[in-house]
Image 1 (tube, rainbow, N blue to C red):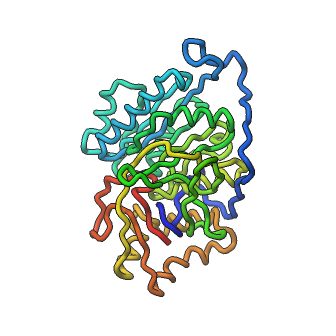
Image 2 (tube, rainbow, N blue to C red):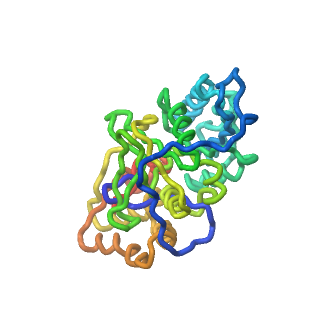
Length: 351
């Protein structure tokens, strides 16, 4: 849900809602850290000498984007087979949420290490990712979120591996650029004040930066964080689950580090502004937008004592003449095409 002062999206691991304000992630310099793995847990010289083997479970949610999904999965395994990241033992759990274009069959035909969870067509991103997480076997060293329309850069896994070695207990957030314009598209976001419904892009240029809110397009979650924070919250309608997860990570005392540069490319939709009060409310309340139920779920967890006021604020603004912007695929039409179902389906409603 990119927005200049926008609506949140997040990820949560619990079904129950809890009130409270998220803690603030550290903002000091990023210092190298060291893994506590033993020598017997390292890769053989035929892989990557001296590097610990990592069991990496990659979670992908897909819906009717067969060619893009096949390209994303193929690219992932291509990069994982390189010598520099041969110690990454990658497996994919892909939720196909009721695709009618043969997505799951095409992915299965690749013959790669992919498990497929079949959805019902109404799970959308948050529930699909939660079901994929639930289907993961064992306790992987890393949980990776990868959106099904991301084309990873040549050095994406190498850079993620290097930063994980330096910061083994940090959540790593990859930035993506628009495949057409080359401009920043997704990554991290920072609050405007203390609100969780008004925020703006937080762009890492030369060094990693700490954020509380993250886009879930390319995210690496270490085992220690997954065990403490839990899985993504499938109770959100769609995309707010990644914003929630970043806030929960920060509240648990871990860091969300946005890595400098770009780890891949993605296509985005043009920005459109609502033309009326009715259309403004439709932008907000569409399932691919930032509906009331998701807003309330997020604010009760992370909005502090002022959460009821923050809940009402966007609607009051609309009554006073504010017209939100969106990059959602349905724009001015009466319904969404529902092919763009990523954690941020090309950009949610700005608040």
